[in-house]
Image (cartoon, rainbow, N blue to C red; front, side):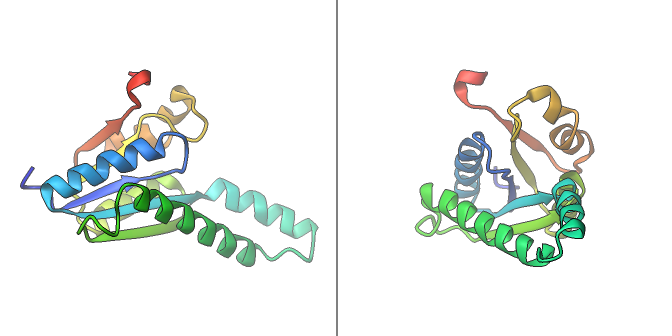
Length: 156
């Protein structure tokens, strides 16, 4: 694993995120690699909120998403700490992004010169066919770097 310098943990805050984080941190630690943790607020959710805001004038979409980003950052930070983040000695960077998840993850892979992507085999919907038809399958097919699919042992 000595060729791994940067590990990307794609975290969607689903039930599978804890196992994904655990595996990503173990690999980063064993490789003495930097760890990048990315969570993406889906463009689909952004567009839905913007439509609601058009109908209800007192809703600020920017304020709403700033709060969502803060909440997700807190939740991701808690997940990192759950697996010893601050005491791990790892360089850890948390990114909360907005947009199309596949597109934003591919940008992170390119922009940060990621060597390995770690992501859950199932996502927020908990339906493997839905996820593999979207973000995870696209990352698996198009990532220029290896992708590790994490499953909980009872799901294997």
